[in-house]
Image (cartoon, rainbow, N blue to C red; front, top):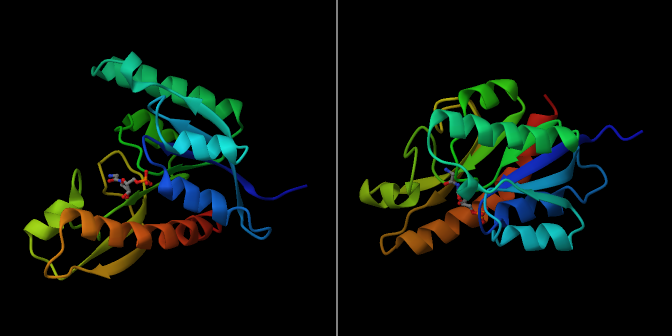
Length: 195
Ligand code: GAR
């Protein structure tokens, strides 16, 4: 019987980190199997790759839900049902642009991780690459961390640094960080699955 943990990836868009995880998990000795990709939007680009890779996909469309606490809980209940139906054991957020309820996060405590394009605790929240440029730092990067109810605040699993160059734009810096993300996330997931 396989001892690989059953992993779901949650996305909202392009899904390039999802793709890096799917490709890494093809190695026979990788400790996780990607069994489900869930998107918060039906038109997420990443769904196409997941489908073409033969991975089960689901959409829990954020457009069907409002912005109240009750809506958030209803959204997370549908998400939980999709994860439970697929017997998911571990969850990776990969560009999932939706804040999860504290109930959902507590339920997955220690089994849900996220990637963020800054060296946390620096530049939490939105547009961290623009925040890094505005702060004129010389080094930025990315962080894979456990998800806790407070945004971008959970314990760090792994980080990768990249230089910030004098003529960087948000786009050039984001691209350099993204390349580092694609190397970091599969390694960080491997590490988290070994705990
Ligand atoms: C990535 O840069 C990821 O770190 C970031 O969104 C991008 C998703 O790209 N996530 C966040 O900013 C979360 N706070 P991808 O869809 O190509 O993986």
